[in-house]
Image 1 (cartoon, rainbow, N blue to C red):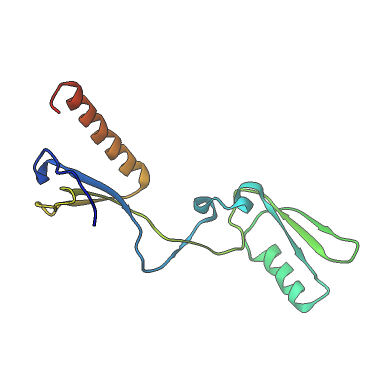
Image 2 (image 1 turned 180 degrees about the vertical axis):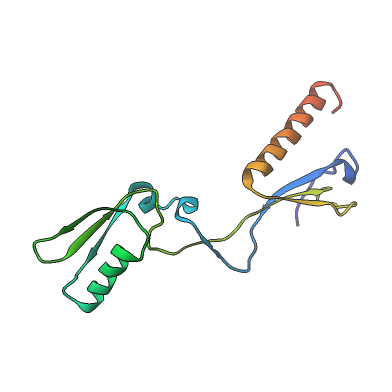
Length: 145
């Protein structure tokens, strides 16, 4: 059981800010959005072109991948090292669980108006939250609370 203090105001005097995560799966995400170290720093892929699989991989990297190869070199054992420039999508699939940035009318007692606002991104939600907190601080300074 949750122990809560009874608020001073009516339920309609409040807003609830929350970040929700849907439980129904992940979404494919860009390297840049997940903090991929290969995206930030670049990376190397080593391919053995002496095999059929290696030849197919090298062909894909050179002609179909759309990635910028900063350098290509052969090792002493005959493998090819592809060095990729940073700030481009790597070859890994990244998955994240999306976040939903919600502001609803009311508090834990309910949402009398049924109003719910889903912000498009975290920056908008944070700005809304900060403006709300500043308004509360201003009211407290004026002796309203």
